[in-house]
Length: 141
Image (cartoon, rainbow, N blue to C red; front, top):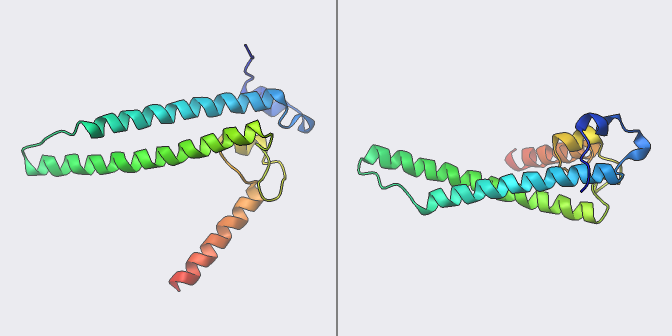
């Protein structure tokens, strides 16, 4: 059984330890736990949607319908997140996790702790978002 290190221990490691075995196991454990939470949330939302409440009152029926729409949006977001988690686990298996998909530079432990599914370092992500805003502005302008 592997020993899981704490975030503090992780952050105290030297830069030369970046994405060593302990760090990879830390993020694998975190991603697997996050995937389990997503799967549980999706199953719960689906169970609720399969057994809709029949409200005789039109106002209550409208509220229940709105509740179902919220559940569907939530479920879609959780499914998208689950896909990102599975992709991150594949990158871990391929020893690509923790490195920017565009620049190849280390993403950094703090960024990975905040968003374990991230694929880009902060600089590249900022540039991508700036390009998205620029193109969105051009389409609407």
